[in-house]
Amino acid sequence: MAEKLTKAELIDALYDSLSPSSRTTRKEIHELIDGLFAEIKSAILNGKVVELRGFGTFEVKLRKGRAKARNPKTGEIVAVSDHGVASFRPGRELKKAAWEMDTTLIPKTFKKKE
Image 1 (cartoon, one colour):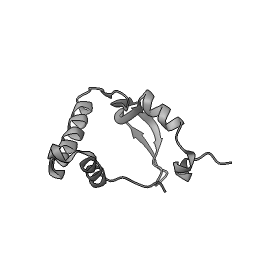
Image 2: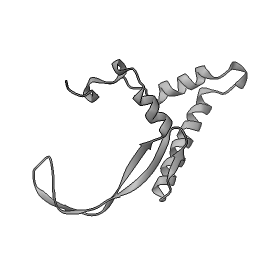
Image 3: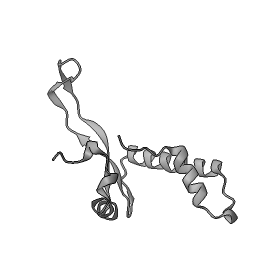
């Protein structure tokens, strides 16, 4: 399984990367990150597309409903109406960096079977 980076670890990494003269506290960084996520969430739930150049695009896409969908747990046939699905498309720079990434860092669950 891939190693995870939690929000707390992300806050610590950002705090450590700032110069001491910035005097930004961990609490301020936490509030900033929470605010950023809240703004992205609010924007996409209001029908906007959030584009972060060099990183990617967040949006909600429409998934068409089906009259004969199957519940994977019970096998029961159910009807599913049209609904929104949160989506992320990586930007060009992120795609290129992932393409050139050291393959030993990629989790085995995502490696192509040989």
